[in-house]
Image (cartoon, rainbow, N blue to C red; front, side, top):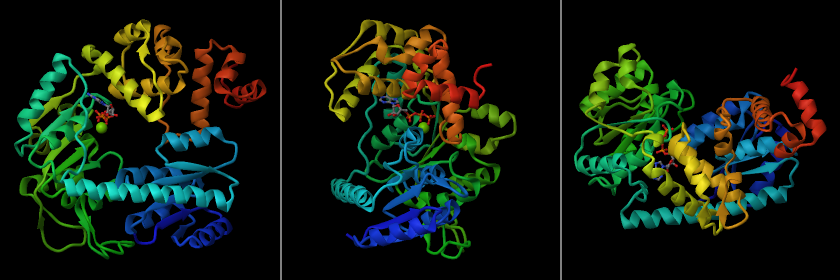
Length: 451
Ligand SMILES: Nc1ncnc2c1ncn2[C@@H]1O[C@H](COP(=O)(O)OP(=O)(O)OP(=O)(O)O)[C@@H](O)[C@H]1O
Ligand SMILES: [Mg+2]
């Protein structure tokens, strides 16, 4: 294995230097950056194995960096350095998909230990990937659970459309399983042993998207220090999954249309068209037809994509799947957490049948994960499902999006909703949030939560 390459990001140059020296002692190859922007450029141009970033940077948050990496290089694990004692910020870091966190101040030994553990994981994963390649399959077939007539119809469609090269448009509310179905189509297709490449058109800034999709030549723009193939090339002979296609900016819509029509594309800064053979699956939770009518989405592109449309119904419209999925996720999180829960209380199951499931299958999965983690005995009871309980009382317990909000805003939301949930009983609220009563009063005042 080549030396492990690590990017360290921290705006305190002394800390940065000390950590760099310490890690270089272990034989790692270290790059450093004092800012978020510079770090973004580095991640675009360098092959990295690990990124270690401070949560708070002068020009932004380490979470932005994490978000970008998750979209573009999901295999690169990120360790976040957080302020000591801020449980909120560590939770935010982990929920956002960081591999681990280090609470400041930490010792060099702590850092080395975490990195060494991670290097082992990476080596194992590389070995696994090599084995999978030998076996000729790029990813494992996804598990699609459900027995409702609606889902069965969709699975039939998947079998029907998989062998062809036709473009497919997947629509449906958030969390209904669009990505699962896209991957199932790929796995049942003759392209199954070639890559399934996903690109999220909504999460990548417009100016970066073109470079991600079509690649670039060395010197195409400042910072393009080496040539990079685009996703359309990586997906050659496989499937390209264009997620959140409804978010695509007008200029990119034109370029994508051209690519779909001709199979040709140009790398940024390149001279001459290249060809690639991809099957396109697009997904959106927006109503594209409506976007077309409003002039936000090109009609010609819409018709190109909309050759075959598969619409995933919301979970509340296929109640027959709820129980199956609940047990499936119970088993999944039993295994992950080494638990042996066997039962779900009837009351829970019956409440689940009338719950609105605005987040669909994803919401059910999160709810089950939480319940499995919290439960002590061998049965899941109503008390493990505060959201269902709140649903019965007509409360909205869902927090807004975590990423994109400041920690203070997230904290404010959490306190506000816990207060409501506890009927403004301060003692209970403080206990639920696991903070002192005095702290709660201070925060209520700070955020002007009560008159
Ligand atoms: N039928 C299913 N069987 C098993 N797991 C499922 C099923 N449907 C969805 N899931 C799980 O639910 C979660 C959400 O699914 P997915 O990411 O495919 O939703 P989506 O429609 O792409 O949502 P979004 O529009 O928010 O991107 C995933 O963890 C997925 O594995
Ligand atoms: Mg999705």
